[in-house]
Length: 165
Image (tube, rainbow, N blue to C red; front, side):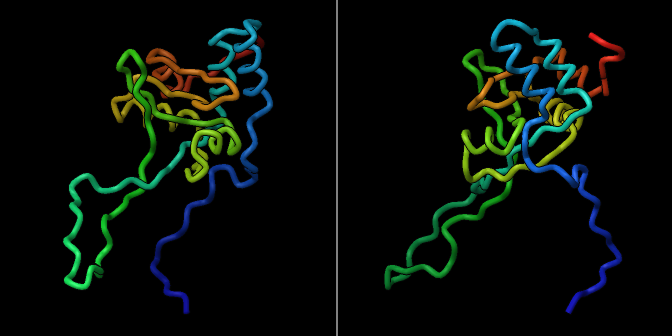
C-alpha cells in the first residue's frame, strides 16, 4: 500500500550522473599537479559543475552506553547514529569540508561513505555556512586540491569564467 502524503520527491539534480569525474575537472587537476596549470584553472573547472559530498554515519555525542541486563544482554542499541557530512582539520588548524570528484576517489578515502552529488556552488555555500575555511577536493587522491576562503566565496557566489582562458 502506498500512502499519499501530498509531498513530492524532488528531482535529482544530476539524473544521468554515473559517479565519474568530470573530464574537464580531471584534466585541470592533473595539470595543476604537474605544474602545467594553476589553482584558477581548477576553480574554473569546478564552477558550474558538481562534486560528491560524503555522508557518513556518526554516533550521537551525548549518548552513553546502557548497562547490560543481568543476563549480559541488553535489549537497546548501544548508541544512536546520525548521518553527517565529513570535514578534516589541516596541520594549520583550518577546517575543510570534504568533497570528491568521483565515487572512486571517495571510496579511496572511505568505502562506507555515501556520495551525495551536489552543485559545487552548494558545497561551497555549505562549507561557508558551517564555518569551514576550505573545500578539500579528493583528500585521498588522485590529486588533492584545497579551495581556500577566497575561492569558496567566489564559488558560493556563483562565479564562473566567461570566455576562453
